[in-house]
Image 1 (tube, one colour):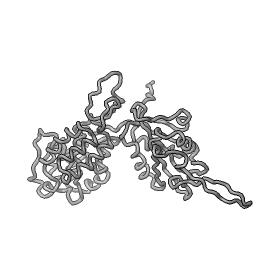
Image 2 (cartoon, one colour; image 1 turned 60 degrees about the horizontal axis):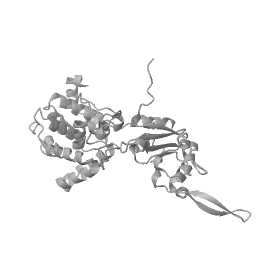
Image 3 (cartoon, rainbow, N blue to C red; image 1 turned 60 degrees about the vertical axis):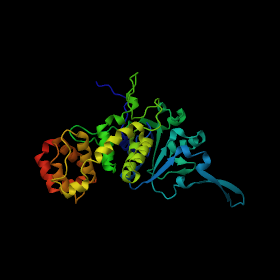
Image 4 (cartoon, rainbow, N blue to C red; image 1 turned 90 degrees about the horizontal axis):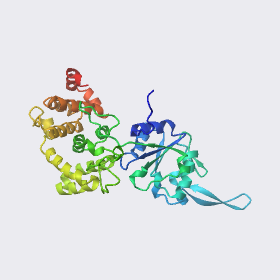
Length: 373
């Protein structure tokens, strides 16, 4: 009989599935390292459940019970006066639309705020205001070991289901495939700059978790978060997203300012390493040059894995119905493993795989290279 590991951390995709399934009855609280994408679960659920209205509540910004409702004086039929609590905008559930409520940073809530949230966690109500039928409530918090001030008392814990979410791994495999629960899959589907994606593919250790390095093992990762290292900035899904926005504006910002901002977003080690990537990025053929002359545009040397990786992810990023034929023609000139990376990355992109499937040249190539799939 196999042993069940009850300490297993779940993926963000599993977290979203669990919340969508039981979140209308029970409150799941996602616990995980800073910046790994816990808050993104709300957007995922919003797309999966378009009949629901998403509500984001930043618990650390709520100061006391007055942030939920205010007293309203009404005159009774007998002429007396009574004070009733009227819900503020975020907690007005009167239109009957089912909600998806995310209680972000619930572990940093003030005690008076948590007292109000207890009824939302367990009874699906704020004061006397009940959530519409079918509404979902879930929370997010950091690990206690992260050292960022999160704490949930026992009486609050028993009203929710706390589960630990693991940091997404890079997810790029040697055969060119990309794991569906990985950061790489997110990057391909959310317009992350291809140079950022290529850097992560070449440096997958940047998304390592300190939780996997215990028992006295030395932590020598210069990029990732560790609570005892004291780094002001570090590489995580959130800072990579910010870095992508910076890199897209690098021609306007200039090299020096770009690197300074990248250091502030994801740390000096990342900025120094990525600086070399930017130099390579400037040497590879542009998407426009490839589209204009796919049979003669420069191809990186077979031994230059970094330039080839950057080239391939650039091709994926700029694939459209107009460019696909030219890009496939150029792709055939690359070493076979990078042809596979292009094809698999393209098929992992939900918005571009249909473009590839409808391309006659891509279909012919796929049939001739079916061993790659």
